[in-house]
Amino acid sequence: MQKRSIILYWLLIFIPTVIIGMVAFRLIYHEQERINRLAVDAISDRAKSISETLLLTVEAVQEELIRSLLSISDDRLQDTLLEWSETNPLVRNVFIWDEKAGLIYPVSGVASTSEERYFASRFDGLFSGRVSWSSGKPDSSDIHKDLGRRGTFQDISQMNRGKRELLNIAQSSRSIGLESSDTMEEGITTGGWMPWFAENRLYIIGWVSKRKGGPVHGVELELMTLLSGLISNFPETSSDEPCYALVDDSGALLHQSGDMKIDRDIKPILRVSLEPFLPHWSIAVYTNQGKTGAAGNGFMITALLLLFVFIAAIAAGGFLLMKNARQNMIDAQQKTSFVSNVSHELKTPLTSIRMFAELLLDDRVKDQEKRHKYLQIMVAETRRLTRLVNNVLDFSRLEQGKKRYQIEEINGCELIREISEIHTPRIKEAGMEVILNIPDEAIIIRADRDALEQVILNLIDNAIKYAGDGKEISISMKMGTKNCEIGVEDRGPGVPESHRKKIFEKFHRVDNSLTAKTQGSGLGLSIARRMLRDMGGDLDYEPRAGGGSSFVVSIPLK
Ligand code: ADP
Image (cartoon, rainbow, N blue to C red; front, side, top):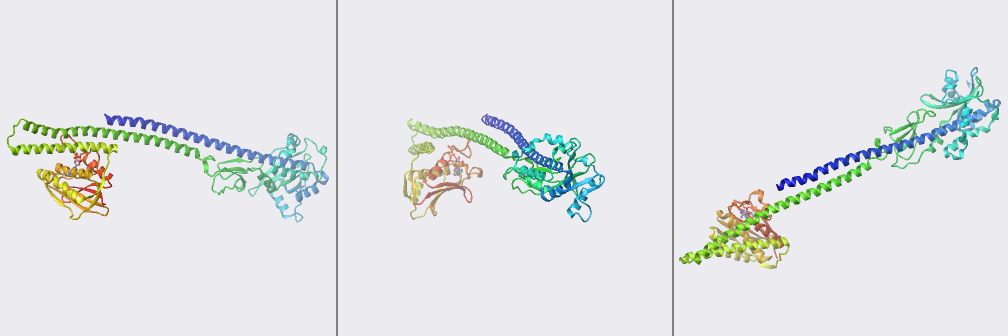
């Protein structure tokens, strides 16, 4: 019944703990997922805002260049463009093209530089007329309207440094070859920017035509200059923040925020395209934690750790409570059997004392020898009773920590001889013989005389009780390095291996049943060991060579 209720209590703690643990784990898992999602969203928003800033910058620069291209007067067109290509870092190449005459500038042949020849061949599709100019994106068939809408680009004081510098460069060419804006015919003017891929690299060409079917002139954008302006739009990030990188069409890293080392095989957690102004270019975001996002699993680890501590605390508390309950149960059982054992122990000598006392009282025993023998039995039984009561009293004193010792220097050999002399008649009466093996010279020990005597007496009593058939008790004494060893040995059945440690526990008896051959309280050895340990010594059991028990008392030397 008791055991069942312990299991029930255990289950009452265990099942809710497991359920709480599982539910908490699910909640933590979902919360971590939500945090990761939020982190990825925040990263994605930041990447989008960087890309928007870059695109707006490119768009503004392109618009400014188109304005500048439109503002060049027809009669100074070639000179102005040439001057641009030399002075404006945003301009890589300039060109003038006519539908009928083809490429007017740069001229083909030796008059042009190798860069100009390469430029002409790069854009051969456009210059040969195979690709129409208006296919350029973004489509700006009416750029006057478009430019008007974007008046804010003029307010360059609001822009960041990189963008401002780029726009200054783009505008710087406007003063050269300027034509009054009213000469431009609205609705007829066309122009735009066209991303162009040659040998898998991005080039950007901008063009304008003031008259339908008229000559087209324009510039090729110097991407390096554009890039140097764009990278100032990048945020400064610390090492534990995600890294934002500008990646070109070939996958090369042009610029990155922070100083994270990005290997070629690391995959970005997300990419934001820079279409339409910089096709195939993108903002890529890298994190140290790989794919889970910038927040990592910090929350999950901390929460799981706390959950683990919580469950471990409940489990440990529950385990200790159960252990305690079990121990209490064992103690209660042992106390019950102790009480019945002690009662039985008291009853046996009392019965025989009473029986012999009544015989003597009624004067029914006439034989003097018999009377003497009965009186001897009564004395022996009273001694047994005294020993038992002393044991119980000692036990309660030891349990309460009230036992006091009077440590003194004693000649151990003398003490053991005295004890054996006093008890030899009793031992002999039990049909056993005493073998003494004690050195002649004195061995001075430090002990409480009465306590040590009680220990030896207990061991002798046990030998009589449990090993009477062995017919001998051997008491020996020898000197160790720090301790003196007193051995009390018999030729009885010995203590079974599984009980050898337990016999020193309180109330433990090898045979605990009331029907046991010999009765006892299970206190003798536990009290003996505790008293010896209190005095700085110890008590151990070892099986005796050749059969029997060997109890070894060790006690400190002087
Ligand atoms: P008690 O003798 O009152 O039962 P003890 O603490 O003195 O209590 O002994 C504990 C147990 O150790 C005994 O019940 C007995 O089974 C075993 N024991 C003690 N001494 C001997 C011995 N000399 N030979 C065999 N068994 C012994």
